Image 1: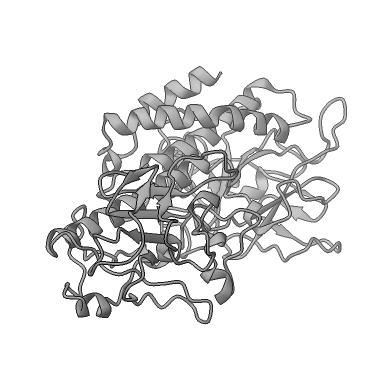
Image 2: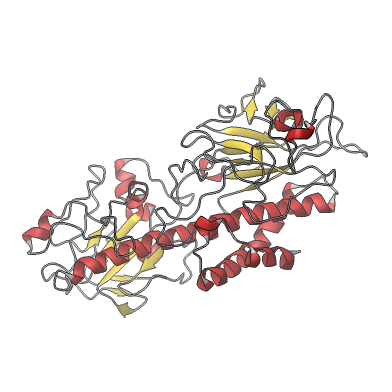
Length: 465
C-alpha cells in the first residue's frame, strides 16, 4: 500500500498556480513522504480501531498523506508565503476546493477536495465520498496566522469522552478526514438530478449538501459541526464550525457484531507530529530568505553584516541592534549598525525582488523564532571572541530557525521569550545561558549530534541544512 501511495505523490500535480515545482522538489517530496509514511500508517491503524473495512481504511490513509503532500508541495521560494497550508474543503462535491472558506483563522468543514489533491474520488465501503475539516490557521484561503508554533484547532475524543490526541494545546489536530458510512436514522442524502455532482450537489438545499446527513452525534459531540452540547466538562469550550476557537470530534468505541446502530463515522486526523516534514520545509523557506537577505546586505557593505538584536528578559523583543553583540534576533532598527559605518536599511529580497527584506507578509509570525550570529571578523567593527563555526567549519554568519516548541519549552512571557533554551536545542545554546556568545563558545550545529529532541534549522553564508 505504501508503494501505491508514494507513486500517487510522484505523479500528482496541483493546479497551474502551483506548477512551478522542479525535479529537486519532486525528489524531496519522495523522501519526506516516504520517511513519514510508516508513522502515518501506524497512527491510522490505531485511529480506525473497531473498523474492519479494508478499502475505507485505505482511503483514509491516502487522503491523509495526500493532504500532507499538498502542504509540502508549495515549497517554491519565490511564492509570497511559506509552505504548509492545506486546501479549503469542497462544498458541492465536484472535488474542487472552494475558496475562500470562511474568515481568517476560522476552521472549515466540507467534503475532501480530491480533485484539488490530484486524486480520483475517494469513497468508503458504502460508496460515499470522504468529508474533511481543516483548522483555520492552516487553511489556504484566507491564509491565517501560520508558523511552526501554530496550534491546530481540533480535539478528538473517544466514546467515553477521553481525549485521544493529547492533553496539550500543541497536540490538537490540524485536520480531520471522515468516512461517513451508510445512511442512518433520518439522514437524507438525496440530490436533485439537475444539480448532481460526482460526490454531492450544486444546490445547498439538497440533502447531500448537508454534513449532518453524513456525520453523526455521540455523547454530546456533533461531528457534523465540531460542537459539544453535553453536561460533562471536557476541559474547554468547543464551538460549531466555522469558528476561530477549538472544535471537537468523536470516535466511536462501541460496535455490535453488525456494526454501530446509530453512529458509524470513522475518522483520521493530521497531528503536529505527522506535519513534521512540513514544518521542516517551512523552516527552510524562512531560513533561505533570511540568509539571502544577510548576504545581500554584506554585498553592499564591504562584506560586513549588521549587529543582531540581543535577547533582553526585561522586555518583549524590540529588534533593535546592539553594538558589539554577535548573537541575537534579526534587527529591524539598524541604528548601531549605521553608527559603525554601515547602511541602516535592509536591501530588497534577492528571492522576491519586489519586497524589502524583512517586510514580508509572513515575517511578524516568524521573527521571534529566528536567531542570527556573526563572526567577529564580519561584524560591523572587529569584535572580541573566537571564530564563528557551524559543524566545525568557519562561516561569516549563522542563521538558526527554531522549530516547533517542544513540551519542555515555553514562549509566552517576556522572560520566556528571552530565554534561548525555549527556542534552540542543546548544541546551539550559548554556554553562559543569557543569549550572548561567550568567548570560546562560538560553535553551532546543524545536525543532531545525539541531542534529542533536535529541530533547529541552520543556514550558513553559503547554504542551509
